[in-house]
Amino acid sequence: MARRKLNKEDIFIATDGLLHELGYEGFHFKALADQLGVGRSTIYEYYRSKEDLITAYMLHIMEAFIEDRDKLDQTARPLEQLRGLLHLFMKHDRILLAIELTPHVQKSSSDHVQQILNHLWKHHHIVFAQIKELVVAGIKCGEIRSDLPVKLIEAALFQAISLNKARNQETTEEWANAVFDMLFSGIRT
Image 1: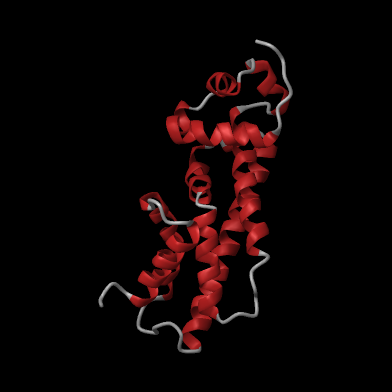
Image 2: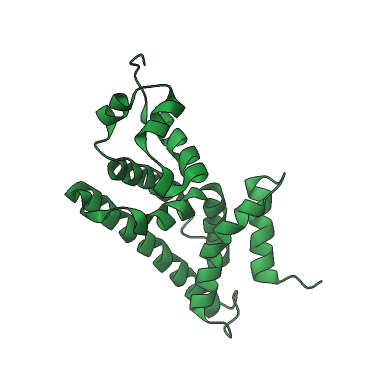
């Protein structure tokens, strides 16, 4: 195949599609090279191994989420901050895939892979801590029910990302608002 330059965004888009189609175990550089219309050696110019590529892809997803999260209004009321986080979870729904991939990645493949995985888990824990802080603040100010366990509310918010798979024609904003309203107002009329 002819050699051509790739950019990392193209590689990540193709990686995302193949992970969705083939899963972690079925993903390999030959399929990626075929998808991108290049030889396998071209992929190796960018990444030394499957684990290097997958962790770079996972980090790319997390960094995009963190960048948007850092733009949220930290002075808003707790419930509005939680709404903002839920919108970001819907916008960056691949973050759930990144977290689900973590146990599959061979951590022993390189120190670099291990460092990225540690970095990803650090950010994952920071996001969960932020959700917990906002839930606790929401309970204290009377915006959130105090009779429900904080862990339940925290997990429900984060797991709501998986509801994005059921979205049809709704925009991310419409869907996130509907999920948020269902979580915090219930389904009764």
